[in-house]
Length: 589
Ligand code: ADP
Ligand code: MG
Image (cartoon, rainbow, N blue to C red; front, side, top):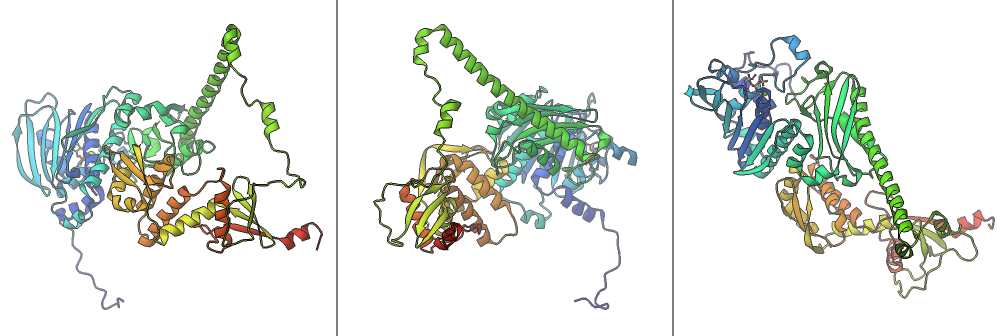
């Protein structure tokens, strides 16, 4: 503990420029992806309509960004690397309505402080350009150079002089994925700019820059996305929202493909995310998320972009206006889908009746729909009566050694097993019980993963960051019965899955596992337990599914033998109604 006497600081000194730059660099440039984001933003601000981004080794050794923008005058080239040097903001008033992506004048100084830089730039119509070389923020060389109009900046050996920061870098694959994700967002933010991204010598994507949102989405996310997107639009005098939202059938297990742009700036926002998801409230089950590419345009003065060093968050003058804008745009798109679906059904029926009317031969072949409302009514089982006994099963051929007096009477609501046992009636939650059995097996290490080999691998597209997270945890997944391999940067191919998992659940299980792997500060055993819970839940027989009598009996016997009492989440798996309680209910006691 400090006493007054111990607590003595040194004399207060102003930090050297170089140290101040290193501290600032820590805020602005945390990893290669943040450097790339700043450089692309500079290129966009320069008015370029063609931008090329190239990286090697995840951006750790080499980043190049080339644009055909306005270029930098020779006289300004060195100044551009000073801290707080910007051509985009003149005075405090300018902060109230920022129309450029950059404005803080920090990025070039910050990147230069922690790397080796080569800059080649030529203003439009200038007779020659300038080349500038810096190392750790110090100018090494500056000279006139012949080069195309626009700017090329090459950043080598990021963090070479800050070993503390270098230690925090993840694998090149992981850093490269984060860069790919940033470039993708920048490219989506401006369909009017053609952006090419080259990674380790290979072009990853290339947008046409034809100003069309759909062709931009297509070149970045592929046809499957474009085909599943619904046009979403809303506007009032203060805000306009335009773009695409996914149809409910294309929902995903995570939010990796929710893209929001406010005045062409890519941002992360819980407000916008919840506005979007509210619109799907009645359409999507828990744990499924819509995707979107939504462009929100407001008056510049209605948004404060100066709230985050990396400018990824903004504040709105009116949260409600923005929330409503996104909510109604998405809701409108979903409503239109309903109407179109409804119309297609009507047209189908009308069309079919036309064919039937016109073609007597066809008529004889077409049978009436098997379930009409009337016949369906008849199929609903009559209300339970006490006479005869409501549910009966064929006598089971299996003996149950653990509890010989156990008798499964049936199943209620496709979920609860009803069992008579030792003068009580038990209700057992079949999903919860099965889930616990799986969980115990996984946890007690008597789980030999029974992998199912998939003839055709399942291709999952969890997004750049989750794809690399899964590949980094390959051996953990292997222990669970999954085998995954890279399939392009944002996708993985799954060749084996645990035998208990339904193939259709592959993507959602992996996405749940990613969500758990991402949580920090959690003890390893707790994290493992949580992953086991996810697998156990997905592997367990589901409510609503028909289950064979043999399986019901086995579950009941394991529950009533006392082997399990609660599901992995702590809920009870069985509920007892004693004979005495029943007697009392019938006034027999
Ligand atoms: P900011 O973008 O916040 O102004 P930066 O440090 O990123 O700060 O850039 C400093 C200045 O350098 C910019 O204001 C701009 O004038 C100039 N600049 C940087 N990159 C480019 C580029 N690619 N093309 C033209 N000018 C650029
Ligand atoms: Mg900038």
